[in-house]
Amino acid sequence: MSDCIFCKFAKGTDNIPIHKVYETDKTLAFLDISPLAEGHVLVIPKEHYQFFHEVDDASLADLLPVAKKVALAVGAENYNLLQNNGTLAHQVVPHVHFHIIPKPDEKRGLGIGWPAKQRSPEEQAETLKRILAKLS
Image 1 (tube, rainbow, N blue to C red):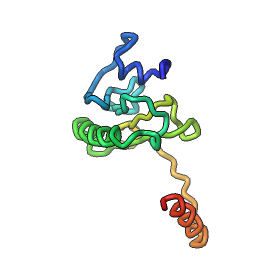
Image 2 (image 1 turned 120 degrees about the vertical axis):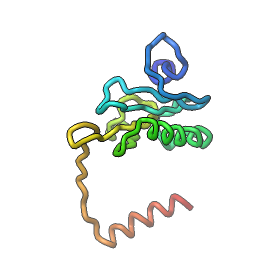
Image 3 (image 1 turned 90 degrees about the vertical axis):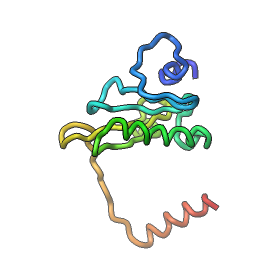
């Protein structure tokens, strides 16, 4: 995608400066320009995919070990590994990217609200049935 900023980062076009952390043939990791905490890194596939479920298996096989390696290098005891899909899910750049966000204390890092709801066993069974039907 020619106007995707992350594609430009991956291709090294437009002389856009980034703080590269790690790179392979298929994956690029760099510091987030608006970090939630020191060491906030983004890990992206170099090929353009908007959604996680679109990423080919070869790219995923490279992407996740790189995310693990970078998470270890960041050195945070507590951190979030976050990946959003679609604008309603807070995806701002329409290119798959994993955030590694250190959580050094209660104030810095990612803050999350988790509005959990209780579901009946019957509702859970219906959800399970729907998911299993698509996995077969």
